[in-house]
Image 1 (spheres, helix red, strand yellow):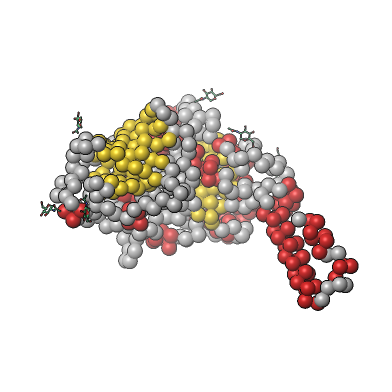
Image 2 (image 1 turned 90 degrees about the horizontal axis):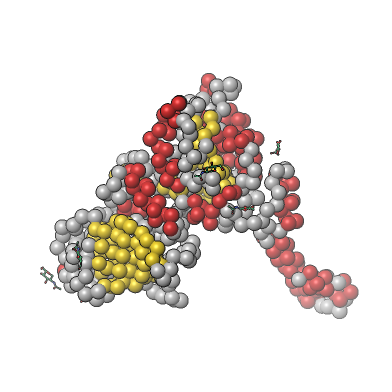
Length: 480
Ligand SMILES: *[C@@H]1O[C@H](CO)[C@@H](O)[C@H](O)[C@H]1NC(C)=O
Ligand SMILES: *[C@@H]1O[C@H](CO)[C@@H](O)[C@H](O)[C@H]1NC(C)=O
Ligand SMILES: *[C@@H]1O[C@H](CO)[C@@H](O)[C@H](O)[C@H]1NC(C)=O
Ligand SMILES: *[C@@H]1O[C@H](CO)[C@@H](O)[C@H](O)[C@H]1NC(C)=O
Ligand SMILES: *[C@@H]1O[C@H](CO)[C@@H](O)[C@H](O)[C@H]1NC(C)=O
Ligand SMILES: *[C@@H]1O[C@H](CO)[C@@H](O)[C@H](O)[C@H]1NC(C)=O
């Protein structure tokens, strides 16, 4: 490419050209140069570009490391308190991998004797720095949340080496770390990135901001951004003593250094109440990264308590996170049934053919975080009706096993009888006898993030079990 740039800019040649051709050549040469530089700048991990970038960020402690992002590049900041940790520990324990995941639980004070010896199944703890010595302290409307936000500074001062990302989260946030590694790997950790999620509740976003990464949902900061933030954090606290929440403050401090939120759709604040199964059964087409508020919603599996539900979901997560909660839809034409699988969580069977567009809308099994006029949710929902053609038979995840042929078999069992007549407009094919659903998926190939899979239903005669095989979609396959 550089040779063509050279030859077209050789001045001698221009003497033989008419002005029209001359200008065209100049324009082409300009374009070629432009694309050449555009390419140079866009090429990720180009040494020249990165060293320039690092110089600008003045960050001598990062060495250029273009190896793929892995779990050891991520530092978790689990914010908690001595009072909350006692009953929230099981949530963190459910996803933490001892000696693999890195980071700390940040507490307001030294843990009492009953917490010691500190278990190795959870992150080691650190006590946040006292903030009473801050000049602005008397003016802070909510000092607890300032302590929480300064965990970023306390984590930075811990000085752990080789981190590319800091993750802020609550003690009742669940993480799906394999997916997190994959998703963060898409971003250039040597640049400024603030990655998080909105609330599900329009009112929460309106009250705080549509541009804020909600803290319970968890948000990620690239290491250079952390360095810039910690330098200015106490100044930011002084500027905004009236801010109430730590994530709202983080948004302000980051905005003041010129950084806007990047939204990832697998990050879930769960500002919802009661039964969130409708939402978890129609997850967006994006890897599941986090789930929050397990302490406030109903247990996600109806026969279990909150802690059991958490551990149960992690049984599926342990074998395959790429498919977890990913929605796969297929139809059984002989009986006019629609199947919607949320892998590792639920299967819905409808006694009619319902399009993907409709089935991808969560059933509104949950209630709003707070009542307002107008719309409540950041997504469309389907109202729960009594129409037998619209109400699914609901099956929840029961067991998972790795079987021969390099397959994973997940089994889902009926939660409760549907107690409705059959859908007459679709031919009265009752699914009442179906008591369990078996789903086969590939064991050693992760699902590609952002892409869907297709499925086939295998219904053997009068059997009370339906089987579904997940597979790659065929080129140009229409799912209808
Ligand atoms: C770099 O690391 C050293 C210790 O290894 C530390 O003393 C120094 O403050 C760090 N510099 C920056 C800019 O973070
Ligand atoms: C992660 O990548 C680094 C290189 O940046 C490498 O040194 C380390 O061994 C890797 N860790 C894991 C757990 O793969
Ligand atoms: C983690 O490593 C430490 C020290 O190497 C060891 O004592 C501990 O048993 C390990 N924990 C787990 C859960 O593997
Ligand atoms: C499926 O439903 C359609 C109406 O939606 C109906 O015309 C058709 O006969 C039904 N097919 C079967 C196999 O029942
Ligand atoms: C379905 O059943 C209802 C009530 O049992 C009946 O009225 C209707 O005709 C049936 N429809 C078909 C297509 O068989
Ligand atoms: C399902 O069918 C199997 C064998 O046909 C039978 O053993 C089992 O009890 C049935 N389960 C239910 C819940 O009807």
